[in-house]
Length: 570
Image (spheres, one colour):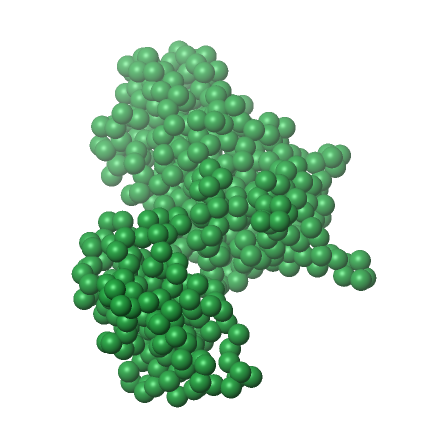
């Protein structure tokens, strides 16, 4: 059940004409009253002798009875209450009770408070009602409507439980402003999948992800095709900004601008500057800085992202709240950057994951910036590493990065759940689901190649790797050996051994540092952890010769000379 308080209005007759009219975005069917302040209120929908004018006069009567100087300019209060598409259809009596409880919760007309405001509840569709009230009470005083939105939301949660409706999560006031109904209808007319506000929010978030300062941030906004207006003080200092889509125009043919804070609380210029203030100048130089250790290709950026995500899990799980909040916020930047540079076959799911996680990136716990530098640098590396082609090494490292991010976002979900952040925890859960879908696509080819290589390994080598697995992970070995991904893991163990690593030590470390209960395939997870830890190529087509060398090697496991990684086994 979603209650939504609309902007205050000046004309009661105007909103009544709309509610009893044919509708604009959706058809209004059989408009009629289901409840009112007075059981005798006229109903123009069911009574031929009743008129909208008469109903308006009765609603406005307490307003007209007070002196003009004391009348509120905007005296029309409007609340819509809508059920979800999967909810059952409520009866007339149930909707009437919902209306009475909502106006009581808001402070419009609470029987326990004595004199109330006049109001009516109109139903013109199965799934929702509209409540219209005038905000002057019968005794001439105004109702106390502070925090009315929070109170009706709380009442909706109670009604959901009592009426057997889908239970929604309680918000905490940190969510981005939702598009208005007018914005949604406009997007439908223009054929947009999302409203202008949502498109701008996504574009601005991508622009700020990993940006080193204001110049780069505004350059990215301009490169994305947005119109920009800056608010500058007389001193010349920049105070804020607004953005607009070039083709989103108002009735006068002018672009509709949105301030950053109206897109999301953390997109105001002061909040964006907090991210930059914690950066060290030598840690996030400009792309043209000589000697800058930056990836020169998408695969290097994705490998670094996987490492940063892996390291951040500990901070989310074990760090203090401010540090965990910083890492979770920076995870949103990484997702935005990954979605921006993703290949076509993973782009939709990664964009949706970033879109969903946006809600999980904020809470009332203020992030302590600075601890999140590695993740913010990973976001920067992704942007400057360029777009991925989705095949070869960058396609495989995309799967590696996504795999690590799934575990990081799962950790964020658990953190939010422990703090009672229901909406953020649910947003993280949905983001993880989209990431898993993207992973299935990204990992299909590289894991398939590894699987085929594992199937072609000589039987003695496969048996040796199985023995290593049983030695290192006795509790998981049986499950892993039964998974389809075992052969991909066997090939990876052979690659690690050929590179001079101790497979048993790598396995024990990879499995021991993080839980594996949420993994769809333990073998797949271990493949990426091992290939990242051992610095093995993610695209395995060029490692076949190394594996063949391992098959021919006369040295038993544990006695090989150092490989290209420089690490001795033992």
